Length: 250
Image (cartoon, rainbow, N blue to C red; front, side, top):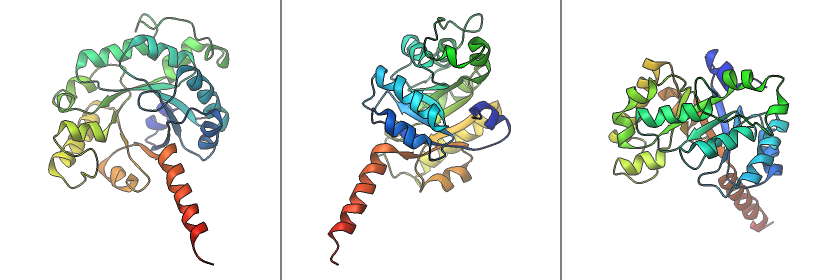
């Protein structure tokens, strides 16, 4: 599979799937649909560490790049998810340069960072895991607060930050808005514009949590990493649609 860094370096777009259900079966099935990346959500999903290990395996088997959203900016869990085979991490609530630097340190081995060596699951998949990790693991802080907006240039200028990922719900709440449905609101639109512009200044890929329906708008706004589908909403809508068909009179 082509890594995210390679795709971004070539100017490409990456469309992703998002998993909250702790199942290697659904992880593999999602990956087989052709998403560039599939993210295991260990923050707001119901995924524990053992489930994450098997889900990462399923995503790789399905042919997509496995990444993980970790619960918090904490080096232990970041290292565990990378050791489990994640090709990168999305880290929530990164609001300052020092917090972004901490994310990079947790993802990189010495002398660049402070990640402890022991890739129990990931190591055997690569002839030289240390070399692979240094060139392939992507570091993705989340931008989702007014504080982070005020520190965009400081965060994005941190060496080793590959992309940032916008959490629209928390960003909206931080702006004093409802958690969703804010496209067209000046405060929300201006925030997205500022993030994309800052990414352009620093050579960082702008990413965002979205949907298939929002993908065209986000693409036009300049985002190049766009999550377009989530397992639970897709299951709910699919089940509801089939039930509605089944209830329809013949």
